[in-house]
Image (cartoon, rainbow, N blue to C red):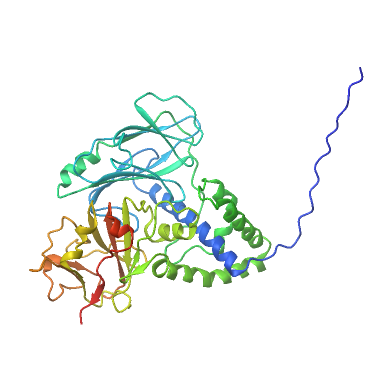
Length: 434
């Protein structure tokens, strides 16, 4: 019998056009803001890797009162880790039993999306114990005492928080009981190379160099990731088409970047009582713009059920907050911060534009549920903010500000009640003392 020869012709493709059309301003802004969200997490990974003793899959037990990222939380004992897994190697995380104080083990992906919180509210059937963190699609066998948690990619960031609750020694003892170790030696990819940058001077046109490496470094679970990444690629192709195109994009970004920075602190979330906040954070759906804002202003934000955040950069007269002035926050007796939470509340002062704590002689950077604050005779609460103690406010209620420099306030509500999540409660306005 004669053999039938089958010949497959090589596919032919249309020749790509030699000229690449340039993006309009809206397309460029969308692509830039989307990609910046990933760049901010890459920046944080590079910063974390520089810490003394850093290693993947190794928990760093932060000393009390320290956290080297924007808008830290000084009301908890922190633990941090970067987990790295591969197709054959999970990481085992052991969470101790924590009683009668707030705690959560927050695990986030490489775009700033929360993968899971381990605590008694979200994991009532197993709020503590041993958990296996695995790469997507991993199909290995696990011992019965290990609960599987599938990551979004080969890396994840952990932030665990244990409430001090007036007992820092007890919180530190619990902190040290958290353990992590890989089941083997995983292959760990280096984070994409990137020029380090600050929040004041964000990346410019160079953010569109090597976008394939950046996008391939971590899966984005956003429902519109594919369309946004195609938009990024189209801008990158235009930038790569020649010096003229690169210069044109750079010029457009000189307008887009300041607009984004302004938007982040004035328009990115509901603005009520001169505080911006109350948006759904932690999981962003299609709202990549809010995700980038959060990565920019306070990276590693948690989900709304765990915490709702508010930021103030302006006073009740809509003037920027500055250490040249003194201010008062007045909470009426029926709207005290503790009445709005099932967990605890805190307020912290940070400098602008780096959003890190500002040294002061008292080493007093925040107040919270357990601070020794003096209430008024009628049950109301006043917090004074200024470079010196504020007239009419007890010194115990004074939050020092940096003299002559701008600052912002971040107010956190942990396990917020529905009045907070529904927008019916905000912190008291920051009112200028005249």
